[in-house]
Length: 143
Image (cartoon, rainbow, N blue to C red; front, side, top):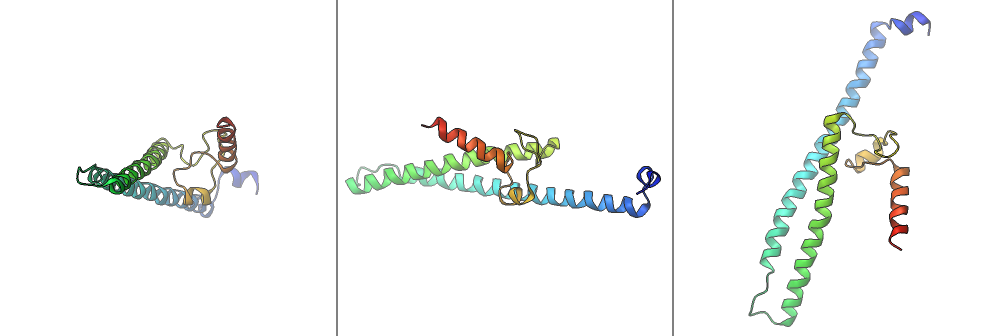
């Protein structure tokens, strides 16, 4: 490519550049839609879990086995909601990064997060390498 074409791209080259940007915007919109859908799903599940937790309250007519099962069920629902609340926080963070134009970049090293990773985990905030390092550090701290 000559210096002239670098400075003054042809219409054809400009269209190619614009098409690439549209694809990026299209993928970003697709990921944003996935985040919003997952957020709604979690919010619905949280509402159902809270209702189910209330239903499993102790009843004086229950025998010991029923009380134990109710306690286990209630604890199970609350543990589910903890995980879902954590995921909800990650989703909210991803949506904020989209608004700021920082979505898709690792919060630790700044490198671009792979498209496959974002498609499978759209709320990912670290690239694969930094996520693995973070998990290893977390595991070592737990010992």
